[in-house]
Length: 238
Ligand code: C5P
Image (cartoon, rainbow, N blue to C red; front, side):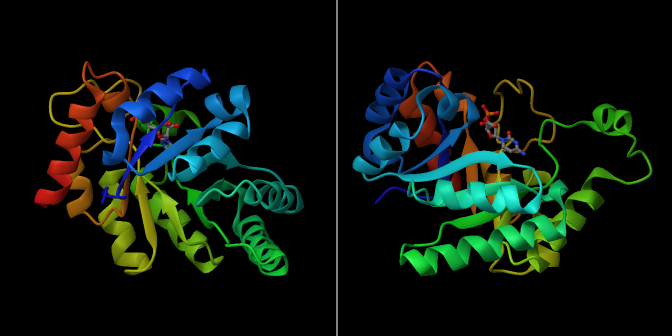
């Protein structure tokens, strides 16, 4: 059985590219992430197709708006059948709590499985210069990540998206059941691209990550299946 801890990011805008990669990776990968590039160009049919291929889906649309709007948006997305949905923790405690409560109420009312709902803490692409530029120079990025994670936990969310570098601190403050999803994964020697706060697959798992989101290191590899298999081996060796 495929190891569900690896989530491959389908950052494409053409449906054919999605089909080619998913078919090429075959049974080795079970979990895929559909983000805004793909969802805005192809729409709900990509989620339906992945489900028809018996895949699991993290629908990474990073909702960020007033509580009522985010709650309504999540309820609409729930009907597509994704396994994980997300919002920005920067939307605040009230937004996260109302959104999570409404989603659970609505799934119970419709008698359909409730997706996990997780919060983005601080994007893994944000470096210290970006951070200071936004006026946050008085607080450390890692402290803010932990603060957002605790806020999401107290609002009843299932987990967070964070850099693998912060996974350990989050695990210590939010407990064993809290989901930690880490992008910013780069196998040793691979290109960093626009990411900043990165780690290798094994370091992320050692630090407590439940799921690793990997995009370009697999998608842009000469042999994506081999790249995925190497990452899976590294995960298993931990
Ligand atoms: O190609 P790469 O492995 O950098 O892709 C990482 C994926 O994870 C992208 O789809 C990006 O949108 C997403 N992501 C991220 N950092 C976050 C949340 C999501 O890189 N904090």
